Amino acid sequence: MKKFILTSLITLALITNVSAGTDGENELSKKRPGKVKDCFESLNRGTFALNQGLDKVIFKPVAKAYRGLPSPVRTGTSNVLVNLSSLITIPNNILQGDFKNAGVNTGRFVINTTVGILGIFNVAKKIGFSEYEKEDYGQTFGKWGVGPGCYLVLPVLGPSTVRDTAGSFVNVLGGDPWYNASTHGNNEYLSKSDYMATKIISGIDFRAKNLETIDNLKNNSLDFYASVRSLYLQDRQKKIANAKATIEIMYEGDWEEIDTK
Amino acid sequence: MSKNTLTIISFIIIFFSNIGGAYSIEPNVFVQSTVNRAAKTLGGNLNKIERIQKLKDIAKETVDIRGIGFYSLGSYRKSLTDEQKNKYNIIFEQYFLKSFSSRLAEYSNPEIKVNSKKKINENYTMVYSTLVATDKRPEVKIGWRVYTKNPKNPLIRDLIIEGLSLVRTQKAEFSSIIESNDGDINALFESLKNFKN
Image (cartoon, rainbow over all chains, first blue to last red; front, side, top):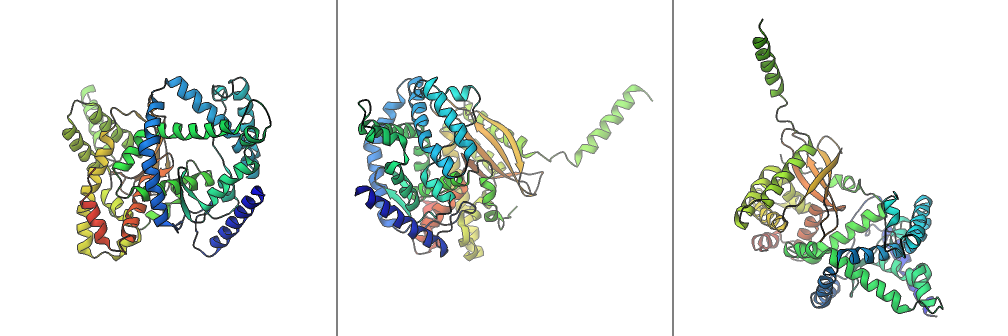
């Protein structure tokens, strides 16, 4: 029943989203970035302030402590988490029709899980595998032409859009093999708490890697909320377009009228 | 003709034939040279005030501050009077230099390697570089949008860090401030003037 309600909500959100995309309000597509509406800005700003408070009291101090761990421990932890994320990336590669990368990422996962001891060592990189690019269901929806919908700030989880939030729900509806194995795997080795632990450590790992960057951005922003929103939306645009080197050319038109020198 | 005379004539020919292109500079060389100057400043023995001043001088020479300022205004730039434009240029430059230098002043001895370049059109070339990893942070890819309309005087117009444009982010920020003040551009002017980091 729970699954049915969630599935219905996602379907509804996506249908609404596709419709919104057709009336010109949501211009963000895989080919051309546009303005994503911040429909709930007051609420979002409130949630953002709450998240900032939580960050100050919990996440930042924990991330600082995590930073104190020996570098090989942090690298190994990060590698394990990245390796687990392949389990979401691979089905999304397939859903996006990118069978080549699905194969490469499957090979990478098998090598790192076995030879690399559960992903602690990134053996695949050492033997010449290409750089790993994460994919998720939000990106796949974007690739399929689903508009982002309104911008959202989720409690604890941070910036998102309606589409990306719907994508995250797919993980717990059977789209993430790691979630399935740990929660519904019916085995004595894994439990739901293992899944939760990996998600929490992922967040801490991300925060620890960006301690200075986030502080710097915060100190130098006139409107930190607007900066984070812009960076999140640019990042999603880049990932959906899978355009590592060409993303800046997509914004070419914006510069056309600036010719001051 | 003696050997010495030939050498002198050759020198004169080479000297004068180079005058036309003497100041033309490749965008990747320009970026690497700018980065080296900044790194030298950050890694030197200057105190914080001197270091910030030096960084500001480098930015004034190598960054198109005026262009970035107008770009950051988005569509609002069209509604500015000449008087407002002049006022904005002054305020924005002060804000930009303060923000830019304090962002950089946090780094000590950053190592940036320029890897490649890609010409987008006659006016722009992207230069791709890498901020080398340290034990505290991972490697960072930095793209430089270089304005090359005048090849003798290239200017930086944007930094794209891991695919995220700093100038676009600034534009979104400015737009948010103006919109949340019912389209009043003076609210932005006040925010820029009051910026303290």
